[in-house]
Image (tube, rainbow, N blue to C red):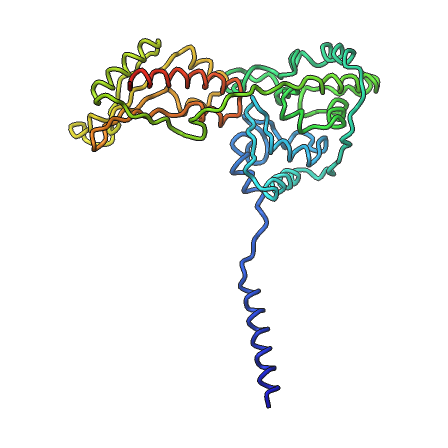
Length: 354
């Protein structure tokens, strides 16, 4: 008599298990197009046509491997406009690559990771004759910094690569460099060296290019790293703090803009809290140098220090952390300038609060 009961119990358990499987969440694979649009479209355009960044859809993706693309996404190009996307998962990176590959039906190639032996001295002579005109003597590419497509007339459809860049050097294999040298690049003005150089001469050129790796400056860590703002409490009252900051800025040769209340333009001018003021300042020489390197920096300039009196009477000085924000642009030259600016602003704050 118990056998039918046992069978019913088993059936119920099986039914429950199947039901749980049916309602279990289904995790879809990452959408490469959506991820590309979020992280890449702003510079490379929706279908890879290029703009600030390289026109990905017109370069021959068959000249590089998926490994090269993955490392490029992960490492970026330090000192150039291409950021490093360390936060993306492996699946997300592969989804981006798959989406890029969908632009072409050319087969995906793999390249040997073995080093190519060559005469570096002879390779340098060939480079100076054949390559330096576009890629510069040091391999840094045309122009300086990342703002060349904004502030200068573009001389090439595809900007010459910074082949000394540590991100590029860490991503590309010797075999890929050789393929790029001999390939017919109708997407740019880079000529093929096939038939113009002997195979050993090409190997010599590869060896020299590989020797050009530029080192990335090592910057000391700051106590304000990963902080968007520097906040310091003043030992003086509000009016004295404002006066001290104003005098310190003038002494540091900054040009001061008219001071603004934080609520100015937001509420009736007669009800502004006059103990919340933003002091904006600029050194035009430094501003020009930084904007020349990275025009997008304009979103956080000019520099400013905000002074606010709290409900308990304490006075706070709040300054955007320009060093942290400059690090977003992946440019070591810009970061070096921002660190110098940070030191100056910290000195001004210290002089104004003690």
